[in-house]
Length: 59
Image 1 (spheres, rainbow, N blue to C red):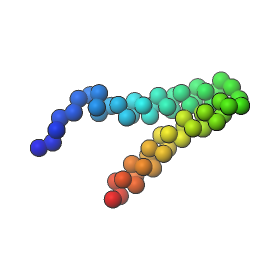
Image 2 (cartoon, rainbow, N blue to C red; image 1 turned 135 degrees about the vertical axis):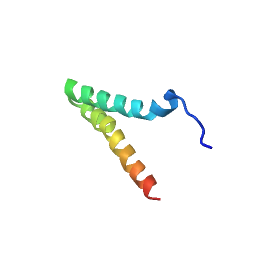
Image 3 (cartoon, one colour; image 1 turned 180 degrees about the horizontal axis):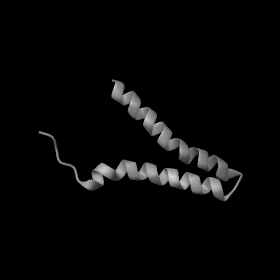
């Protein structure tokens, strides 16, 4: 039998990915310099997560 998970466990990772995306977009729109690098890093997190999930799904 599968274990029941609460809403917190189900939506924790999608919420973190959404916050990283929103944060990256806001940082990208508010300045230049080091903020450009921070926005690239924050917006790369969801892309990396999708690639990791696709690779894990294949095996």
